[in-house]
Length: 174
Image 1 (tube, rainbow, N blue to C red):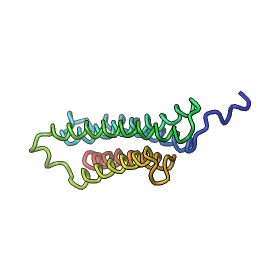
Image 2: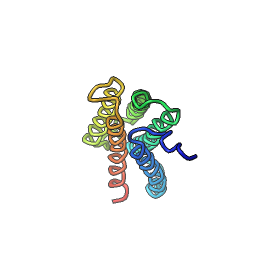
Image 3: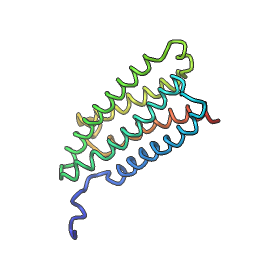
Image 4: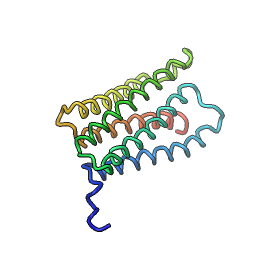
C-alpha cells in the first residue's frame, strides 16, 4: 500500500535481516557439513557438543534477529522493541547456556581430553558477552536500549557458532 513504507520501521532493520540470513545460512551450511563430516558414523561426545552449540547458536540468531522485527510490526516504539527483545535474548541465552552446561557434564571424563580449553573459554566468554550486552540493553546502560547493543549481542552469538564450526571443520575435514 502506498504510504505504508515506514509502518514497520525499527532502527537496525536491515542489519537484523542480515543477521537472520547469516544465522539461516549457518544452519543450512551446517546441515550439508554434517552429512559429509559424519561419514564414519557417530560423532564423538566432544564433536556432538560442538554440533549442538552450532545448531542452537544458528537458530537462536535467526529467532532473535526476527523477534524485534515482529515487535516493530506491532508498531512498538524502538525502546520497547529493544528492551523486550533483549529480555527475550537473555531467556534464550540462559536456556542455551544451561543446555550446553548439562551436555558438557554428560561427556564422559575420558572423552573430555578432546575438548580444547581455549575454545571452551572463548565460547563461554562470548556467551557472557552476549548476556552482558542484552542485560545492558534491557537495563538501559551503555546508551541502551539500542539497536547497536542488540546487534552486537547477535554478532557475538554468531561468533560462538563460527568458533565451534571452525573447530570441528579443522578436526574433521582438514
